[in-house]
Image (cartoon, rainbow, N blue to C red; front, side):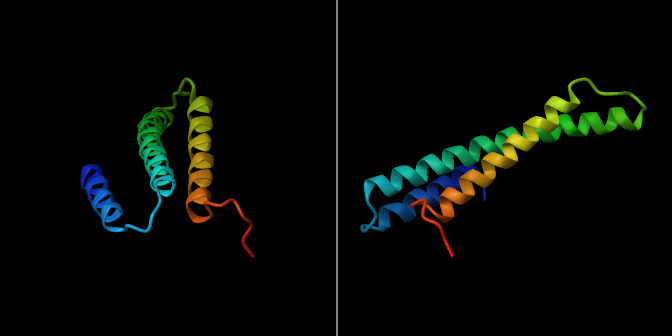
Length: 95
């Protein structure tokens, strides 16, 4: 499903559910925006890592490889934070 299709599907589903509050919908929108941002960042990191792999195969030490790896780690941490927020929106501890 495309991003636009997903957003449209989500918007229609939200419109049909009259029991959800505006705060819940706003939180979900924030989460979706964050996820799409993370997806874009991971795409950039993927491109950089592919270029680094090509350089390494040629025996060339790529510049800023440590920065790229750090960016991937930050994105992974952000994904963990967002998914935790999605699965436990109240911040309560689960057993």
